[in-house]
Amino acid sequence: MNQIDVKKRSIGINFNKDGLAEVSIWAPLAENVAIAVNKKNTIKLVKDELGYWTTLTDEIQAGDLYKIQLDEKEYPDPASLSQPNGVHDVSKAINLRTLTVNDTGWNNLPLEEYVIYELHTGTFTPEGTFSGIEKKLDYLKDLGVNAIEIMPVSQFPGSRNWGYDGVFPFAVQDSYGGAEGLSHLVQACHEKGLAVILDVVYNHLGPEGNYLSAFGTYFTDKYNTPWGKAINFDDTWCDGVRQYFIQNTLMWFRDFHIDALRMDAVHAIKDFSPVHILREIKQQVNRLMEETGRTHYLIVELDLNDNRFINPLEQQGFGMDAQWIDEFHHALRVTAGEKRNGYYSDFNGLSHLAKAYKDAYVFDGQFSPHRKKFFGVKADNNPGKQFIVFSQNHDHVGNRMLGERTSKLVSLEMQKLMAGAVLVSPYLPMLFMGEEYGEPHPFLYFVSHTDTDLAEAVRKGRKAEFAAFHAEGEAPDPVAESTFEKSKLQWQLVKQEPHETTLKFYKTLIALRKQQLALSDLNRDHLDVEIDESKQTLLLHRWHGSEHIYCIMNFSKEKQNLSLPKYKKEWQKLLDSADPIWNGPAASPDIIPGESTVMIQPESFLIYKNFND
Image 1: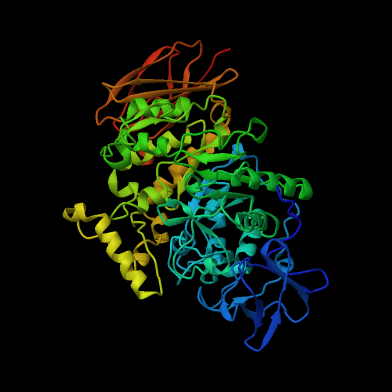
Image 2: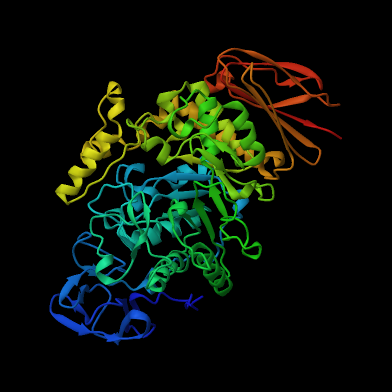
């Protein structure tokens, strides 16, 4: 493993404490490398070891615009920190030392306490900027979430994109507010007690403005991904590529004080090195944390039920701190009425939801008809804090043809039930922006490629993807600005019914999760679950010490009678999603005997508490 200096960024252009520019450009196959500064001054670089070209100079200042010359051709800097004129134009030198976030009293939250709120900067507020997010931090704090997850912000073409087409991993999107705007947002979040998770993409880069191949072997023909050639983590000249992404991880933590990274689709990272790139990233992050005393987490999106990714380094795992588990989402949505097609076809609803509560992975060695193979391993020894669950997220909303949110697909009662199913789980809960008040606007797929041929290819590809769904209408044009505008949250709704009451319901539910030890303690061993397929009901029992909580869920469209176990004390109701105060049809009793039957309304859930002492 290369001993990277974790205390500073050492690729691209960086400034030392004396204000001199330390330049290091990786271009192992180039014959000559130089930097053209402000279109008038050219600085030649000296060939160094392992394909790097370097110099130390006072001829580059923070704010200067520059390009890299490779054998007489000019390109933006692959490690650029700013692209003020877009992905095809000049890079801008930034002194990371001036971005230091003033948050000395902050050192992250314990992972098991995270209540996550996923948002997209461009559509979260009317401004579509980091400063726009800052204006909503008090709202988020009042909601009860304590960690915001920001979809990717690395520079992409144009100003409208989900962020997964980024081509400059180190440069913060200029239309959002750039590096300065992001660092200011992080400081503001920490002042409010909010952790910041940043979504990063280390499995591919977008097509437009991607000049990496001109510099070196960033991609390999050995493997294919859904986006084309795989990033080169184990082929010829891979060491410079590995350092590139390790340096990126360290920068977000060290220089921007990001608390956690959510790493996109790590199953698409192809690496057969003796030390997998994720494991090496974890090792280097551990070194950084030892140096700074700060805590950072690595969270992965993983479409493999393989706990090697989240097992500790000492168990020969990759050491990732947590992962998204889509299987909880799929089982929950099928239970709530989603059609069993596509990736939902493997899921039977209630019994798989019960298994997700107990085992995290639904498929942990069984045959998967959708994949047509035996799939998954057991995760019995992985604690609840290692799994993130949700009833919706950007993918499962935005990859629908019409981008419908849950609020447009199910009843208000079912929306509340699905929220309850997530927030009473023994895992880390995540909300998708606007979910908490039932935002009716879709979240559609949108891009703003400046390459007209590429934009047309994306447009045609999106139409072809949903060709079988034309009975439901045409797929919205992803290039049209109107598609982006339709995806923005409508903040005026939070003061209108039924949205205002839905928001209060979410606040109450989140607060309840935090207040009750039986819910906030993520001990997966202190959990039982019973289902009744005929009634479409699920009884989730969680406990902590003598405190016992029963979460009764009715996914049917009929009232159901259910029996609670015998206890010495009376059952006290904590929450009733069907209560009229939450715009529900009828409330269940506040107090019921220690052994009793309770009627639960259709598409609703009840939470009762007892003490067994």
